[in-house]
Image 1 (cartoon, rainbow, N blue to C red):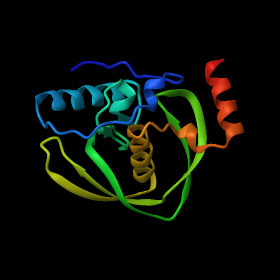
Image 2: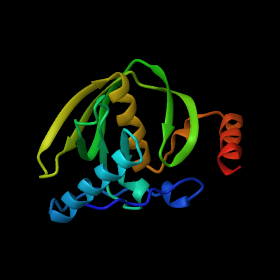
Image 3: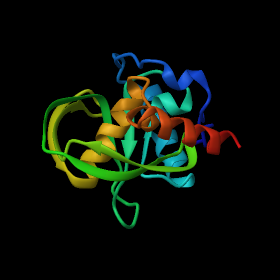
Length: 161
């Protein structure tokens, strides 16, 4: 396993849209292992492949208290969402910046596992927030994009010093 470099704003590669994974092979497995190691070392609770300059639809996360319940989502797609919640979010690609973001309270997710098997998941609370945040990365969206223009400009000014 290897630690990967995490892209940070204003790197424009964070705006790249990820492509669907079609090869479920050892290379994909290695990427997921490396992403998990990188996420835990950062430390963080979620990481999208876009953040490590790999533009494939791969997300890893672990929201457990002991960081011992890793999850891997390949080609994740939100199929339904319900309600709203506001959660203070941060991001490994936007270090030191936190902001309240309004998102769906619960989501239905369709995804594949590392072997290409199809799965569905119902998520709410923090897991739902994390899923939406990481899927945004796969679409080239960072959480600052959900803020007002003024708040986004203030956050970028703080980020860039």
